[in-house]
Length: 183
Image (cartoon, rainbow, N blue to C red; front, side, top):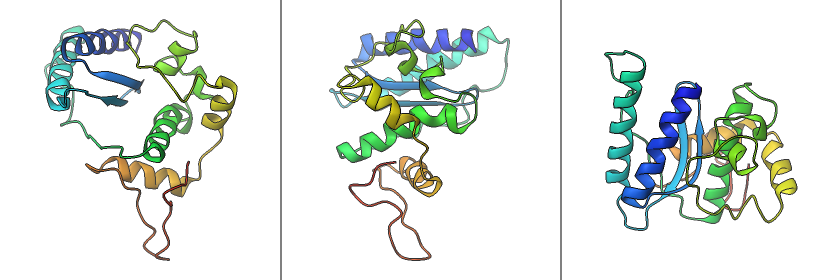
């Protein structure tokens, strides 16, 4: 996993510098990754094609593999409000906790959060984090507060759509999440 983290970090660094990809967060899991990024030049497809191709080639070589590294294209979702961004932010950083790999978000070393907090070396150029640094203690408390499983599922579902929109509860016709809800 350390070698894979290093490859992803280096390729994100290069993608940032070659294509101006603004990385807001990155979390590497054993079989997938999560990233929130923006592209001031509206070139997300170019950025991701470069990043995925080069990462795949390096992982294939490093592991003496012959099969594809990634099962398919990346999912992109436009986060059209601060509410959407904050839900994606918490959902992504909580992923290792939900997977029961660590007890606290800040303890997962394959995430930009650990690097921003000085718990691990961070080579990935992360855009300024306006959520974490006004109050690290309050933000970590919020990130470590367990999320309602229904809301978490609504966010997961919403992030698989081109324009983020959390899933509505079909049985009651009530929204699982309202516009001002946070995980």
